[in-house]
Amino acid sequence: MPDYPPVTVREKTAVVIGGTSGIGEAIALAFAEDGANVVATSRTDSAVAETARKIESYGARTLEQSCDLTDRDSIEALCEAVVAEFGDVDVLVNSGAAAARKPFLDLEEEEWDHVLDVLLTGVFRSCQVFAREMTEGSIVNISSMSADLARARLMPYCTAKSGINALTRCAARELAPDVRVNAIAPGFVMTPLTEEEYGEGTALRAGIDERALTGRVARREEIVGSAVYLASDAASYTTGEVLFVDGGFTRNAL
Ligand SMILES: NC(=O)c1ccc[n+]([C@@H]2O[C@H](COP(=O)([O-])OP(=O)(O)OC[C@H]3O[C@@H](n4cnc5c(N)ncnc54)[C@H](OP(=O)(O)O)[C@@H]3O)[C@@H](O)[C@H]2O)c1
Image (cartoon, rainbow, N blue to C red):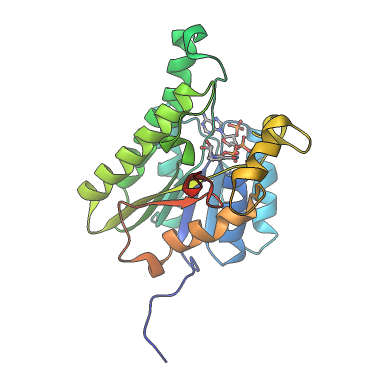
């Protein structure tokens, strides 16, 4: 039998912030099915409770605690509650979402601040709070291929995602060797966040289908494997990396 670290999160304790919808929820449920203790959280109590029931349906242990990435106290309370219940945290996934879709010249400073506060400073807060408690393990930040693109009317989003990639590399350096820090950069994925923008029949959808090497948008479940891998011991030699899961969109050129 070859001796390689397995692609599994079995028996690990994982926290998924932004874990009650879309990509984060898909990751949380896959972790639960794979045998981890999973705490999936967001700002909305009812969504936290609903996802907790789904996690339990896989026989996994969980905890119901809401959390807001813009509020450091709520992140600290979450971390304390998880450590009290499970003793340690092995895996943190940051998958909170925010966007302001507006031309650069029309953007209000409050809109810029909000997106940066949730997406970038929020990830800084949560990485810092949890890394202070984690003795070893893996942090996975959900970035975006938009970090490397000039997307129309999405300047704060693209800027925040570029920042997440830099934060990920710097945190990987400072937390090494005990805590690995990586990011996933998804392409276009169908979730409640994106349904309106590039659901079936939209103008953007036609452009995506043409440029993505896969010829289509992704299902949220197609991002899960990369998260399980990066969270697992199989990625024991992978840190400071940004893994693009974009159907080849950013590789396609004329
Ligand atoms: N979908 C895509 O095509 C795509 C592509 C690339 C990258 N991404 C990234 O993937 C991540 C997840 O996106 P998604 O499409 O899965 O979005 P989604 O379905 O809207 O899910 C977003 C989650 O974040 C939570 N959230 C929002 N604001 C929060 C806050 N301040 N504090 C804590 N939780 C918060 C939401 O719950 P509450 O509202 O209850 O707080 C929800 O659980 C985002 O970072 C997004 O930028 C998505």
